[in-house]
Length: 389
Image (tube, rainbow, N blue to C red; front, side):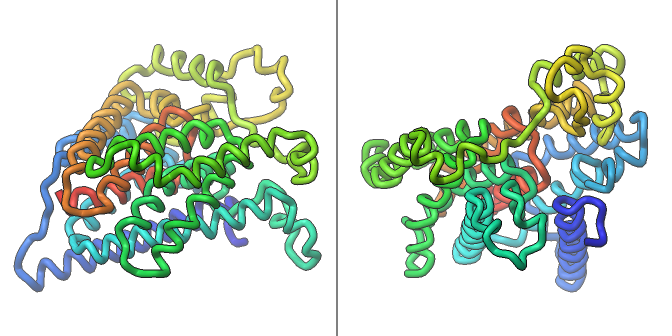
């Protein structure tokens, strides 16, 4: 309650503190051992280019403060947040090498997404409205701990391959049951929320999992996943049945409003025409929206709304860090995809699931404007993959 932004600021402040502390501990460990522990990977050159380009974009930005720390203290996107992602990648890729620890980390992610999804689902179905002593903001049907219906759907879709892989890889009974039950919750969440990004990414994540799971044939994987697929079909039909939809309060469910893709592209092209190489700088889109939004927006129901993000992160990067920053990040994604495909033959049984999650989060870059958790877990999963290549 002490921040002006309730969902992003506290998360990123915690990540900055934890990442800084881990980096300090890692540095002290290397000093005491008198040995520099640094894991080389295919991402070294792309990340170096990305850091150099984003630093230059910050130097030449229209607002240095916003570019360094983000607008309205949201930190993301900003140079500070981007550097934290790179540091996170190197810390965990160099220090998480045990398969047992990697399994625990994946389980932690799956369990936390399941809890966040359950809370978001209960809120979306209006359950929290019935509890009188809850604060008003929790009673809102759009409430969830991630901060956005679309971002929650993206995380749920990214978690699906990990739940499938966890159920096959773990020998722990509790983790096994979580891995077997969590997919049903994830599928229910994405189908009920009906966000466009979630409805695209959920089947895409399953396809990525089938492709990356080189040790089993697609038919075998489809047969094992038949209960989940059947549940998805039944639930999709039920949600679109008027009587059931009304009973679940889906007829007046909250919808997430985002800026249009065509209008976002028009703003991006105007910025590129004026500042093609480095764009206007991180954190500048709220100002760009005010100055450059198409006049046709005033003839829509969104005429009185102000957006601080475009329709997708790809357009955000084009607008804020220009062609150089956009292609530098595309280079990182290209190498990330190469790592994901290469890791199909790794000894870690969770490698294929991590690869599928990386592909899902990379695809979300072109479909929606993610909050901080999606890019963070993209780099985190890449670190886990690098540790076992």
